[in-house]
Image (cartoon, rainbow over all chains, first blue to last red; front, top):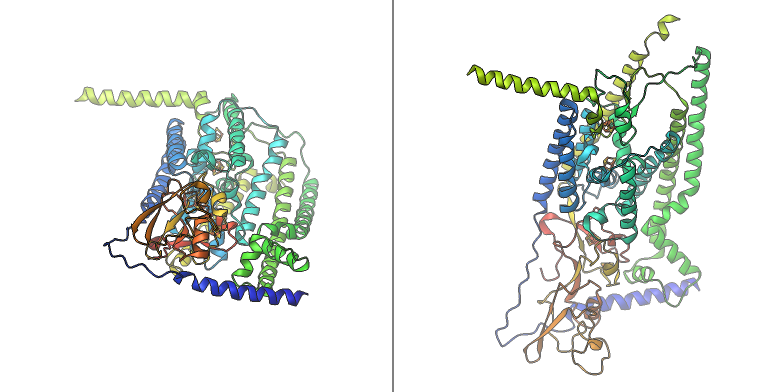
Length: 440
Length: 189
Ligand code: SF4
Ligand code: SF4
Ligand code: SF4
Ligand code: SF4
């Protein structure tokens, strides 16, 4: 039965192929007598090269301005202006692609797939924010990223989520990042691009579901700071790593009077209040705790790896070739009169089941390996989050959690000491100008 | 004992330093790897195009593009066209009367303009503002005619998505990236 089907299909292919070969020459080229001229169409490419250069230059310039504003000037106004420019230019004018968030996938793909050549601008769009974050904290997130800027601009109120809830939701960006890498590395899909909630808003059209989601996120970000950045953005997760170890960074006003105002103003709950850890831990207990972690971490990683391995079959459904293979296989077992379009086209283009099977097996093996690794990483992330929640450290002053701080500069406007400082600075500047003027 | 518990700050600083070094190394490593790659594979492909020899006019291009009206349009390669009176892309198969009533026409939006040139030739032109990229005409032309009507991603409409959504559902694997220098895969080029 099976071989009979195969024969039939082969004959079908032959007929189709010969038909395709003929297609170009069914009718001869007309020879016109009336002096008819063929119309000419021009297929010009818009100045994409120029624009992507402008993108990169603007990106670097806007991040530099932000770094200067939040580290040297300690003012929010320039950040605010940068946000508006970003939403207008990167958001509405350039309408999204390529963005730094999605570029993670291109970078991963270019390392895995030697046939994919990544344009230089794409790499710069990915690496520049990482470099700036390493030097100055998340100045990209402050207002250069159109997604962050948009959420920042609509934010009016700042309802706090409890620490446990934000920690739990804070795991999502890591899982998202890990899955994005998994699917990019297996050449299956760019899920960050597919599930981008804001691009539909910037393009003013597109997938209705994603636009609705984007709208809901914006409504949410009116009442709590940057929900997308905190609980979804995979690039934010990556940047938070570099920000944690950044070299020059935003700081609490040195003459802090512990008034708590900045803590309340921060949209992403990055300012930690002073805390006194009453329970003094003995050294023995400390060692015990460390040992417990050393067991807990690998156990979680292992559990994650197992779960990932088991899920790899369903995870691989996203891959087009795997889907096609499953359809074809199903068709082999249980042939239908009308084949699905994909199956029909596959055979009409001369594809053979064996070749497809080999391809699917290879992708399946890739998925198995990558899903295992992804599961292990997710296990680790969960474990580390739990450990972080349980650890309490003594803080003598207000401290900025640089991983979370998006360098928006909101806290500066609330800090009475910072305002006072700037007033006196401005005064002395004016004074010195006046003095110089008098001197002349 | 005192010695070990004395300075939590310096331990924090030390960890911070280690982290910074690791982060810096990571950036340098990734940049280095990307640079060597850029040297190895010179030209990067950037624009999405349909390979006209692969496309089967399945109709997904109309539906799957992220834009409300697809960036894929029908293109007419006049130099391939037979200028037939009975155009397989213009008329539906088995129509009774060859007139321009909508029920006889292949194109659901009436985007194909037909103009008499000389006996027995007719010129067909696509009005791109009406075309929705459904590929019905192209399918007709490819099965009954010279295949001069075909689908292509129009660069001035296409957003050059990081990953063309259509490419992930195209049954023929016809959508791929092309280099900046030759951003159109044309049949009569
Ligand atoms: S966290 Fe993500 S979305 Fe938010 S500003 Fe940073 S890069 Fe943009
Ligand atoms: S700059 Fe200040 S307000 Fe903004 S995220 Fe950082 S700590 Fe919070
Ligand atoms: S999805 Fe692929 S086969 Fe279908 S019309 Fe578009 S390019 Fe052609
Ligand atoms: S790249 Fe995007 S805009 Fe262009 S054809 Fe594909 S889905 Fe449509």
